Image (cartoon, rainbow, N blue to C red; front, side):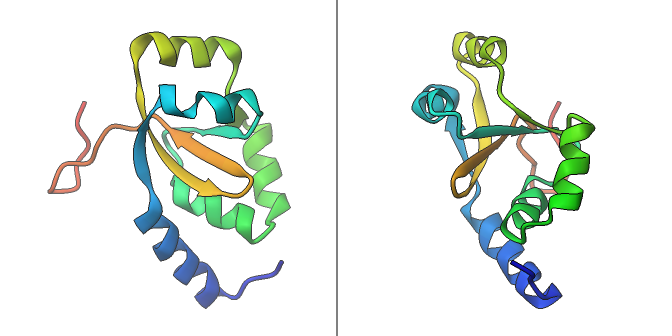
Length: 112
């Protein structure tokens, strides 16, 4: 589906408000069904979700080839389970995108 720039900006704002932190343990069943994609910490996860909604296969394919978007491996899932990790999430059906980035602090910098 081709989206106008205005539609993409609206969707970005909407999805940004729908992001949430979730414990990995609550995402296990979605992982088991193959519906979780890990987004590299250097990417704007919401922008990736907008690309997916816009069916921007050129950019999505490039990011997959660069391993900036990947399915979560069994090893990663086990490590997150053992560490009881909380991940940033956003849903873009049928996918749940996850990212391990740190929480932003009020001035916009990231905690280490």
